[in-house]
Length: 272
Image 1 (cartoon, helix red, strand yellow):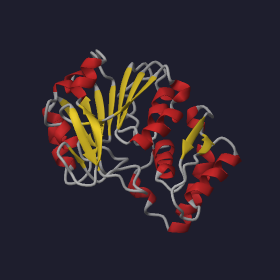
Image 2: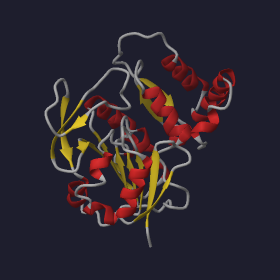
Image 3: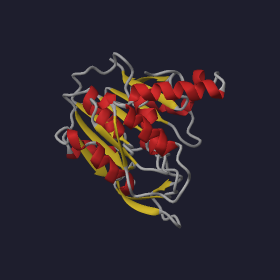
């Protein structure tokens, strides 16, 4: 189910808490998974644990998903399987889709969900953080024939990128830069042009773009890839406004609008 973000904020906190509990019963297969989830998100703060918790998720056909205690993984799971912000607009992409790019795949829950919703599609997920990438490999294991995961940052050019990792911010990173930044992790960077050419992708049905601040540069530099994309959804970060993103997408040949379900997302569909 997908509901506008602001509607939920209209209800008092106790009602929101009860509502989330009922929703969680619908997300998971079995009471044990609900209990495990609540234990993770409401557990006492402690140092990050390497031990993952497995949960059976209805939207994944009852297969297991793995999240880490004392991280943002619980929130990522809730967004993926309740809000479902990552999915394309209804009627814009059919179940016969053949190629989907999950740019910013985090722990692989959205990648796995794409594989279930679009059973004929090749799903290519790209994630810059090695710890997230390791969990993503586990979460997409049942769909290995469909899913390819790449440990890299999406950037307008190939090379190296740097980001700052912070405990408790595993669903987003404070810096992405192609230059030297003190105290940052270094990761390979790949352009979408290179990604598309190396896989010989002539047509891309959908692109989910959640790349932590690189979206402005990616939508303005080396954008030849955009001509092959039918539909995309971009989550915005920092000072890059929805108005700016909409203008950039329209300049790339998309009909663009603001996503009514997410306050920081813009959708584009290729003009006929």
